[in-house]
Structure formats: C-alpha cells, structure tokens
Length: 102
Ligand SMILES: [Zn+2]
Image (tube, rainbow, N blue to C red; front, side, top):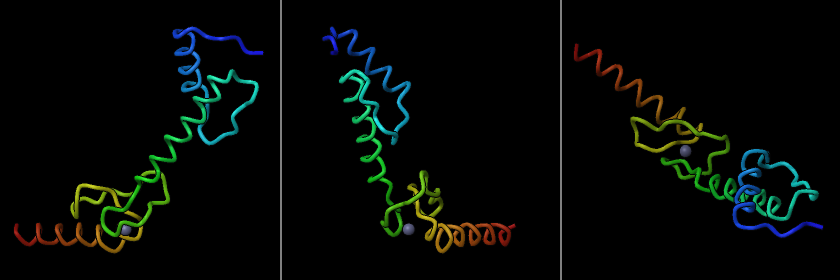
C-alpha cells in the first residue's frame, strides 16, 4: 500500500499533480492518495471558476472558455450573444463618432 508522507513529500506530490494531471481527465487510482486528492481539488477549482464565467451584460453563463471582452460597454466579459448584439455595435458606433469628429 501507500506509505505515509512527511510534509515536504506531500507538497512535492501535490506539486506533481499540478504539473502532470490534465484537468477533466480520469484520476488514476494507482496514484498516491495525496495525488488523487489534489487532482480532485484541481477539478473542483476549475468547476468553481467556470461558475464565475458569467456575462457582465445579460448575466447568462458563458459556455466557451474565455468569453468576449465587453469593452467599451463595461470592464467585464460577455457572452457571444451580447458580443454580437451589444458590444460590437457599441464599438462601431464609437468608431463612427470618432470619424465624424475628425
Ligand atoms: Zn450576454
């Protein structure tokens, strides 16, 4: 079975998990329990992160990994819908106004 680790080794195992584990993939049960636990933690963190991926305009959940920059509408990110229907028109408007001022 698995031996007990001292603190330093435990940190190393956790670091190994961070370096080598690919999030979202199956956790290999042959890994040391410390590594397995860390893998689960990594997945949890990612899940929590993705919950925070919310459109700053319509507040719907953003499905892709990064969302779109909502500038100049606001400082956050936005979903594809708002990008197309709100953000891009706002940018075009600014561009047109800018040209008119010249
Ligand atoms: Zn939106």
